[in-house]
Length: 308
Picture 1 (cartoon, rainbow, N blue to C red):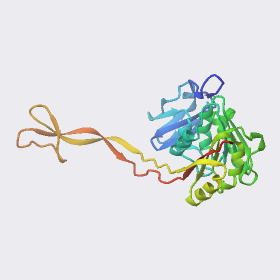
Picture 2: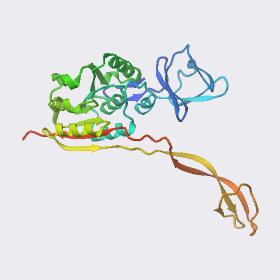
Picture 3: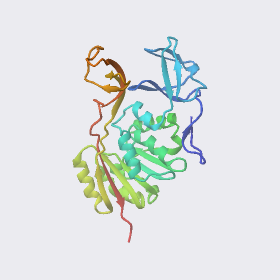
Picture 4: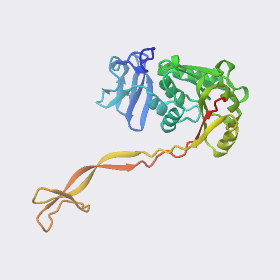
């Protein structure tokens, strides 16, 4: 499914194969992850879809059901995977993920340490950012959660770029074998300040650290711990406002010169006193989404001080 050899970027193959993971897009807010099996079918309100009809089609294809309904078969990109994955823990969404990857200066070839793995939402995006020659080492103290994450990374095709470990980073710190090797460290822990000393030992000189915390009290304690060995400490809250674009109708006035001008709404066509005709026309309307996501957490960034 995913190509991640040393000469190519992380990308999806040209066509869907038996055993691949696809994102089934039914409508804007209804998507699900489905593993393709030649003998299986998908049933929903649009009808019955045979998996055998999907095999050989390119990602992004529109496929029809026995009733004439349709769905789209999308590639499991990190952005879409974040929207459909199983929530074993609270996850990071695209606004926070894109921001922290930029501020952590993660590029192809980077070595990144992460704790904790959770549902793997961020890890999948980190894997794409470091591909094809970098690597992500992610840790979670919960053994079953780590095992589920490994299965997910294999399904999405990033398992060659991610190593999952079971370890209590708050209590034990990161393994010594990564000391001085990490370009970036990310912490998503209840008490991240306890892991700050260990994170500092793992980073290269001038390496970057990010801690995600939902509460400002956690941020305060983390910043206190960072003061001794880190500089350029900054905290951000990323708020994303999305808009819906849809087609709607407005009334327009068609005058004798053939020019169209807007007029106040009316329920039916009528002829004005000047002899022009009022008629309905369509336009594109843009409005903010009512269900926009609010506060998720705070992102605290810092850079390891260089030895003088």
